[in-house]
Each structure stands twice: as C-alpha cells, then as structure tokens.
Length: 529
Image (cartoon, rainbow, N blue to C red):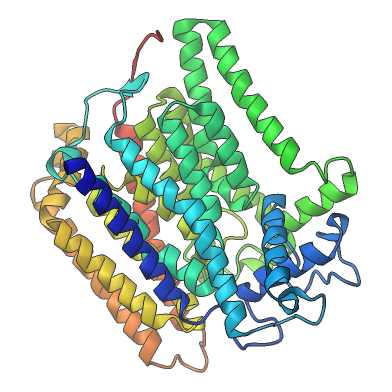
C-alpha cells in the first residue's frame, strides 16, 4: 500500500511539473514578432529548415542557401540531427513550417504549438526521467566501492526530504522552465543526458556514463563545463584500482571508458570526420572567437570587470581567449585535483558545481543561460545542503531577469519564482537548515581557527539575515527593472546592476562549494571483490 502511495505521489509530482511547463509555454518566446532576426525560437526553426532541405555537407558552411549570418548552425552534430528529425515532422504537419528561404520568421498558432510540443516531448524523454531516476536511485543507493568516511552529513540527518519532493523541486525549478518553455531552447536534452550520466556514475556503470555524457557534450558544447569532474573522477578511480588491485583491472576499466568515448565521438561525427574542411568548419562554428568574451550582460567576472576596464578596447579576442582559458583552468584546478586524489561520489557531485561555476565565471563567450549548467548539479546536491542550494537556485533564476523582460516573460518569472520560494520555505525550516549547513562547516574547521574567524553560533543569524537581505535586493532590483526607466545616458544600467549583483553571489557560492568539497573527508580505500 505504501509503495502504491509512493508511486502515486511521484506521478502527481511529475504531472504537476509538466503542467507548469505547458503553462509557461502559453506565453511569448524569444524574438516573437521582432524582425529581421527574431530570436532563439526562429534559430531553432531555421535549423530544422536547413537540415531538412540541404545536404549534410552544407549544414555548417556559408552558401547561397545557408547564410551563416542568419542563425547559422553553431551547435554540435547531435543538435543538427535533432533539428533534422524535428524538421521532418514539421514537413509532415505543414511544409510551410520549414520551406527553404520563404519560411524565415514563420509565426502561427499551429507552428507555436508544434515547437512547444517538440520541447515537451524531448523533455519527457530526457530530463524528466533522468531526474526521477537520480532521486529514486539515491534513496536505495548502495555503498560505494570507494566511499567517503563519516557517513551522512548533519544536513542529511536533520532534514530528510522524500525523493518525491526532491523530484518535484527539480521539475519546478523556474530557471529551466523559463528558458526552455518561455525563451525557447532545448537545454532539457543535454541536461537530461548529463543527469542520466550522473545516475550511471552513481551506479558504478562508468562505460554507460561515458557514452551518455558524450551524447550530452555532442548536443551542446557547453557541457564542457561538466567534463573535468567526469574526467578526474574516472581517472581517480582507475588510479585507486591501480594502487589496490593492480595494473590489469585498472587498465581494463580505463580502456573500456576510453573506447566508449572514442566510439561515441566516431559514430556521432561519422559524416564529417573524413573531410578535414568539414571538421575544421564545424569546430570554428562551435567556438566562434570573433563574438568576443561575452554577449549582452551576463553575471560573470569578465562582464563585471568590463565596467571598470573596457576589455574589448584594449585586449583582442585571441589574447582574451587565452587569458580566459588560463583563468578557468586555474580556478577549477583545486576541485579537480581534490577529486582525483579522493574520488568519492559525494565529492564528484560538488565538483560538478565547482567546475561549471568556474567556467561560467571565467571562461570565454559565456551566455546568461549557461547558469543552468550550474543549477542542475546544484539540484542534484540539494538533499545534502538544502539552504545554500536553495539560495543559489533563487539567484540563478534572478540572474536571467533581463532576458525574461526582453522576451516579455515577467509574469511567469514572478509567478514561478514566488511559488518556488514559498513552497521550499514552507517545506524547510530555514533557520534549522542554516544550522545544519553551518554545522558541516564548523565540523571541518579547527577550533583555533573558529575563534580567529569568529565562527560561533551567531554566524547562523548572520547568514540568515544575509539571505533575507539578498532576497530583498532581488525584489528591489526586480521592481526597478520592471517599473522604472533607466537614465538615457546609461540605457544598460539596470541589466548591469542585475548582473553585478548576481555575480557577487556566484563568487560567494564558488568559494563556499570549493571549501565544502576540499574539506570533505577523503576516501576509505576498499578492496574490490
């Protein structure tokens, strides 16, 4: 009977999450009624048009039928194949949806339904089952072969949340809903494949995990944000097996993982790999240095630094790309080295946050939507550190506010964010949750340092009021950007304030999660049976 109730509750949680998705899809989308370029909605439609009507050799090249300046394809082959499949369905329902040249900017109620449904279906096939599997498997997860010492942290002991509620929280996260179902993108595909790869990692199925992550990476190149934790975690496990089991089992696992990666890339890139010009062109389209270090206003370090030092005026793109690469690798190095030396699944989850946040803050050509690549690992880590994860999820949604305003999505943004906030605050006792998070920190800091750093019980109150101040700041900035006109001399002032405010938070979270990972207990080496 209890199992039936659990399944029924899971179904209700999923259906509610799907209902929220469809409600958001009723609002406007990126570039609606805004010629000549329109927006991301038109970009996705245009890719369907190109892939269906042109030979594969022309998908990434500038030709008479493929003007790369008009939403040229700039995602990996798996995205192109997805566009090709969607395009054939569009051609079946209405050939005018993807008619070459004449369908540019096509907008109709039927087409909007088709496009929204295409996101809904792939979401049901990727992200939704990935999230359900993750939290369901987390409940019954067996002890790792290489497990962390000390058992559950204080937050896990005091504030257990059922898998059903965790699934519901993940499915109503406003950021992803507003971007995929409002703004219009297919982030749910790559993120769903990524979550499924994490599930396989949790179940110690490293080969399947590698295949799934390769699929995610070949759908959106931004999955590079998550690549280093996978690499160092698998490498660390192989190294531990080498130390305690010998060369043969370590080499076998490393060979199987490597072979799965090579074969996955080979199959996906098969139409392109035998032509050097094709490969070169695709790579140039995936990593366009000419666009500059960032576009629009984004809540990362370089955009905020640009306020004080105009990067684009004094540093060329090639040099800036090298600087960003060095800074990103340097910022992600502590997390990666720690994960290699102590390859526990718990550290792996936190490293996914640290790596993606480092890429978001310091890498080249960052979009505001890329914060979703940090938010999903935070959702996966939510049961272990509910307060700071909740705080991050609110700020990550807020950081994309100028984009929502641009797309006329302020109503669903306010509605979803308020529902998300009040649902979780009603579910959690914030002060108790803060105490749990602080208890984790206090347990990791020597008593002498606690006195020097003034880490006492009063810090719980300090953090609580910092959180309230943070939320008030979000409310004030939301009111300003919605209700006031910026000074004519500074038309981008309000979006810049949102980005700057959010960036300060993200740097704080970056320092916090790095501390949590590095100070966590290391591995207890167990012999493989």
